[in-house]
Image 1 (tube, rainbow, N blue to C red):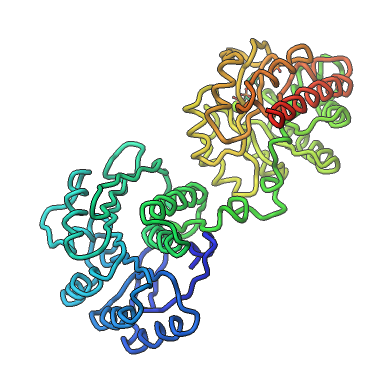
Image 2 (spheres, rainbow, N blue to C red):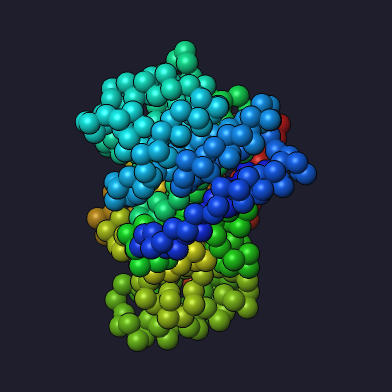
Length: 485
Ligand SMILES: Cc1ncc(COP(=O)(O)OP(=O)(O)O)c(N)n1
Ligand SMILES: Cc1ncsc1CCOP(=O)(O)O
Ligand SMILES: [Mg+2]
């Protein structure tokens, strides 16, 4: 029902069994009497009616017969059968007569069935496991002979590598439906979610192949958005079905929900050595950067004790809150948590993003340094909110930093839907060049992150203001270009 709701479809339920279950497994199943299943089906179909039915666990032959009888009177109602009968452990959950009723009565009525590999094997009565794509194709065509209009064999990791492949046979063609593999422990309910997504899309009138493809796309995004969830003691946690409506499971007023690409326009990254050279504290310098129009701040401290870092960060958080400017902490998740900063910026060799997300939860902003499209792809998969890409030009501020140039920056921008901020050697003299380098109608950086151009200056507020003027002019010109073009 969550899936249908997330896909904009009204749904009703018929309970076929009460289960005691959690992320650790199924502790008990209490089947509902078949006559009561029939009564529930008639209650909803005779009143509101429906465009498509999706069946999940049908624990007895009598219940299967009841469902089939009710649907026999409604030939126009589409039917998706998710033959839930094999536990994650591989144990077949249903007895022989139920399997027989499923095979002989329900499958021939189905528009599409969606077995996973163990379920396909059990329905076919095969001895051998299905372990590869060829096996999946054979199973799909063999299951088609049992009467469904189409068969989707869900392959999971069978293709290995970075792909999750399912095989759909529609009676004429074998379709291989691929999606990027999502590394996550939170896979509880993926089968039911996919089948429900197909039913919702069929109910909306989509043709079968498009419905399956759309449902698969929805499931992949739900898996991605749930990857950081740490819910339950079991091996597999739940999905976040409503990722598209509550900005990835974040609370609406959270820093992450508020975060916009435009926040990256004038990104001031502090440096206490530079500020010390000019006789000012980081706190004073950050206050001046805010006054000069910085749209986001980063407190970047490399040579400081944790206690002093926390104290300084507490003062800067207070300033940033008052000004309504997001503040992220460089590298240190612990400090960000300790002071309630809006998020962190991490590099490729800092705390892995997934762990940072698990520690920070869904409401904080996480930016990550990226030099290549591959790093950008991984960042998206791991739940980053923005990318810091560079060094665009050579810089003395970060030792041994590899310069990627404007070309490298644009390759990263083009490779990702995430907002990108350019960093490295950026000054008032070249900021406009960086922001207007992207060709018309292609994705360029959303802003510039600057250290020495702001903080190794006699007047931080003026330096920031000068930058802000240049950045706003460059970004507005690009906006015009996009609009006109
Ligand atoms: C906005 C932004 N982009 C990149 C960096 C570099 O971060 P990182 O790779 O972690 O290197 P250090 O800053 O830790 O030296 C950044 N800090 N901010
Ligand atoms: C932190 C960081 N990451 C890539 S370059 C850089 C330093 C940028 O400093 P500056 O703006 O002074 O060149
Ligand atoms: Mg770092």
